Image 1 (cartoon, rainbow, N blue to C red):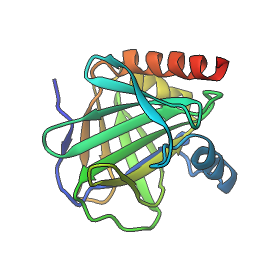
Image 2: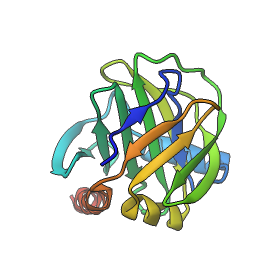
Image 3: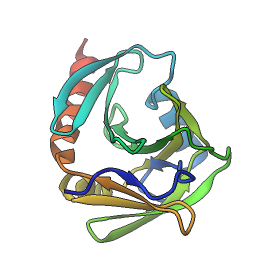
Length: 183
C-alpha cells in the first residue's frame, strides 16, 4: 500500500482533469462554475469508501472524493454533473503556490497523461494547490483501477497518491451526484 506522499512541499500543483489535454476556456469555465468546490458552498459528508471520504456539494449539486495523509497532502477528485468531465485537485498544507498555469504530466496504471494545471486554489486548513480538468475516459478508468497516481508538476518534484479504494469512491461520487440532482 502506497500512502499519499508529497516528495517536496513545493509541489502544490493542481490537476484539473479534462483528459488531460489542455482544456479550452469553455471547458475550464464550465468546470469552475459548475463543479469545483468553493469556500462558500454548502458541503457535507456523504459517506466513506475505504480511505476516501465522499462529500456532497449541495450548492453545485455534485459530489467529490477526498483523501488526506499525515504528511500534509490532500487529493480531491470529482465529476461534472453530466459525468462527461472530471477534475483532480492536489494540495499541500502550508505550501507556496504560484498563481499561473503549468504543464503537468501524470502517470496512472503505466499510462502517461499530459495537461495543464489551473491556477492555485486554497482549501480550508491552509491546504494550497489546484485542479486539472479532464475528459479522458481512459484516465477515469485508470484512476478507478490503478494502484497509484504519480504527478510531475515541475522536475524534480513529484506527487505520489495511493489509489486504493478509488474505484469504490468514484462509484459513490456518481451515486451521490445522481441523488443530489434528483432533489
